[in-house]
Amino acid sequence: MTSNHDVVIPTLDIRGDRIADDIAGFAALSESGPGVTRLAYSPLEREAHRIFSDRMQKLGLSVHTDAAGNTIAELAPTEPETDGRIIGTGSHLDSVPHGGRFDGIAGVVAAMEVARAVVRGGGARRRRWRFVVFAAEEGARFGQACNGSRMVAGLTRSAELDSLVDAAGVSMAVAMREVGLDPAAIASSRWNSDEWLGFIELHIEQGAVLESREIEVGVVDVISGSTRLLVTVRGQASHTGGTPMHLRRDALVTASECVLASDRIANNPEHHGTRVTVGRIEVRPGSITTIPGWAEFSVDIRDVDSDRQRRTAEELVAEFERIASRRNTDLDVELMGDTSPVVLPVWVADHIVAAAAELGMRYRILPSGASHDSQQVNRIAPTGMIFVPSRDGLSHVPEEFTSVEQIAAGTRVLLAALMRLDASV
Ligand code: GLV
Ligand code: MN
Ligand code: MN
Image (cartoon, rainbow, N blue to C red; front, top):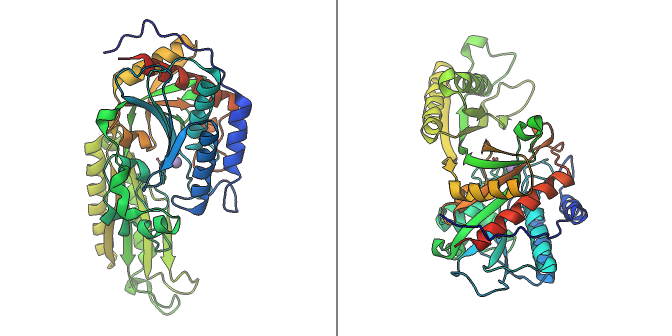
């Protein structure tokens, strides 16, 4: 659709030392304990956004934080604008509990380094470039993922923010107000698709494909969807010594059977490619000498096939209900979050592939198992994703690691791909 024969890849300077400083600066913003804990809509997440904002303002960009908490820095073109349409890049700065230093952060520091490279290095640009930090990407706190980008895409209404609740009972609306955001005004953060030409997010792979094949960059074709359930089991708490086995209504035994059923169903060949995880379980009263009368667990279903994703969820719920009734316990299932898989546009991926090839880098087209803001942004702006390798494929844990050189290599591809978008008509 575009002709880029006249694109000259700039020799702009992408510097690993600046990327390393940014990563260390963000990693320092964490609750105590292993790894990085900087949860969605927490004061630490806001502090990270403030640092991004400061750096971009010092560079001369105009910066604002919208009602959803997304921070957006805009760089004006150096030449008369092509057609007024904008290009962008960015990712997120929140983390899961005890996560790593790179998930989301890699894409933000890459965006910051691209901004520095083009501002300091010059080079003609014919479009406005936006550098974006999305708020509350991780679903770990409220169940729903990609919150800031969903609001940008108009997928979340203010009224829903009262019913998204964290493990401590704090709603997303309250959490947002506590950090100075305005949940009633999130409609104002919506982007207009007519304004956008394209968006590219750099992210760590969170899998081991690139590392195992010694490939520098991945170009994402499909992003998995996720359906998240919160399952509550109610039985009867009672004395562990006095209650015979045949009279028990043990909520944890029901929950345990449900966990094993989840693993069995996901491993069924019919579901090949589906991933199902019970990542959180809580048991009450939590006493050695009392039968658990109550248990609650999360179920996270991921798939690149949207039909199969939802069918798996239905199959799991039907099986959980059978197990609960056989065990004489009650079961409630609440849908915490639901996001469809997304096929990213090939023409944006083609620009990334061309950029990688021009830079002499090895690349591979691959799907994303994790969720990303790109899934939501793609509803507004045609979006591409660049993956950089994850050591041992580990992510959402303190051991998460990607070297500065690997991020810098991905950042060079990001800059070259953005230059291609800038030049395309
Ligand atoms: C986001 O990191 C996800 O949980 O996929
Ligand atoms: Mn992420
Ligand atoms: Mn994540």
